[in-house]
Amino acid sequence: MKLCPKEFEAMQSGFRKWYIRKIELPTFRKFGLYIKDRDILEVGCGSGYAASLITAEAPRSYTGLDIMPEQLALARKRKLPNARFVEGSADDLSAFPDGSLDAVLDFCILHHVEGWRSFFDECRRVLKDGGCIYIADLSRSCIHAIDALLRWEHAEEALFSFAELEREANRRGFRTVKKAIDLGAEGYFRFQKE
Ligand SMILES: C[S@@+](CC[C@H](N)C(=O)[O-])C[C@H]1O[C@@H](n2cnc3c(N)ncnc32)[C@H](O)[C@@H]1O
Image 1 (cartoon, rainbow, N blue to C red):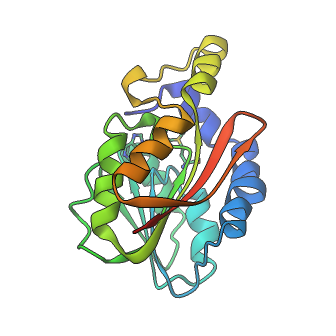
Image 2: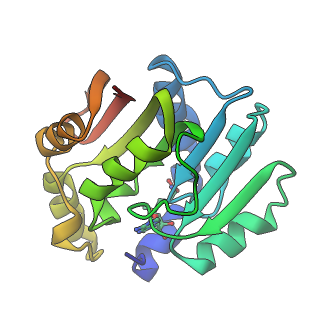
């Protein structure tokens, strides 16, 4: 789902960049993410800030996928030498071959994806054996609070509790390797393909 203009603006802020750099990416690393020489897909890559941090560590390949051409245009402007940016939805990874990726990363976008359950099926297909999904995302209750406060408009069908998220991942062939909830708001998960 496309972002409302106010959320689009907030996603370009220094605070959002700081949060990715200082909190979310370090949490993924603590959970076991290795980037060098790995094949990485970031879903909902937005304007490519995380891409700039990830590609600086020499992955074998990095692809950023996003549904909004405006975000992809900003990401491509960064001219990162070893990044590929593709338009598409996180619940349809048909552009990616079976067993081609080591890790799929979500920096706070799954709560925009109405087909978030199918996202796990798609990840199961495109990940190599033992490949992992790293998720940093917000729960339904947190998004309701944000929408009440800021009037951002999230689609109810895309929202989940962390228990629902984990149950769907487990049902669809992933085991939970690590999880943590930050201040009751952001949830972090590492799910491994079984
Ligand atoms: C909250 S922003 C986060 C952007 C970036 N990951 C960050 O942390 O700054 C959500 C992003 O997800 C993208 N998005 C929304 N629905 C999507 C979908 N179904 N598939 C892929 N990207 C999607 C939006 O265009 C936007 O760039």
